[in-house]
Image (cartoon, rainbow, N blue to C red; front, top):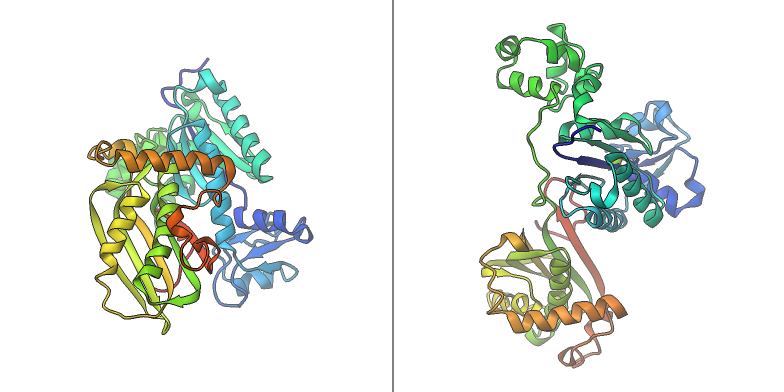
Length: 415
Ligand SMILES: [Mg+2]
């Protein structure tokens, strides 16, 4: 049995947006489907596997894609849906390891080092994760497993769709060798031809070259490529790159001006957001309140907490303070709140649990009740005043955006 200094898994949803649309709409199954804007401008975001033999792929201009595959069905993207499925999949990954690094809506690194005891050998881990995702979502992922992020990522792309490629560390260099140089991280349209002009066509060519020769021709990238070609990549899977903000924007069915009414909406948002912040194991360092006037002007006020926070009580307190800083009389048609600058709870060592203990205890209890009985079960007495419960009011747009991934929803206007 091979010694695995680390077990790094890269998981990638297959033709994610297109696969989701085919899942949602049986008429699209087995057909070439392009996800993209319904106009000739813009580019294809994802092409289903049925469209790919026509030479259509993501980032291709829509006009060109339609020329190559006129029978393809064009479907506009539904990011809200992709985001919620992405979250579902990331949560499944989190069942396997606390170290999940989402690098886009449909891709993540998972560090499984030390988990053979629970999930078996690396190949078995890959199978189990694929199965768990398919069982929950009816969607396929491709998985690569090796000892470095780099090799795991190349491996997941090796056998798409629905692939599983395990590259033991002792074979990693040999496995990489025949791959084309464009599989090296950092080789793009510029560097590719440059390397080929030097007679370097495969990753093995780079591995066999003299490091000095590579540095001479490629500068600092020389050593980088040389290391990758030898399957050396010290980068660890980090958890810190999942979400940078969690927010909730509510477009109201009835415009509001009175501070009490706005506070009631903020209160509801604070509870939703705090619940999600805690469920992800985050704490927030800052809070933003947004109000949209009936003239569609978006007004924003934001501030840092004096200490990282994760309770609705703290969120609402700062939000109420911020509310006093708006110098517009209203009426407003949207009330929004966003917790930003998120950290992992266990890394925010300043979190003063003692000071916020009572509020936290109560809210953690409510988390449990909500988990068991659904989110409308618990309505605090102060939400019942005024015009019924706030939850039934207007359109609610919760969102979560990724640092290195796509913006998954644009909750109206600024930022
Ligand atoms: Mg993908």
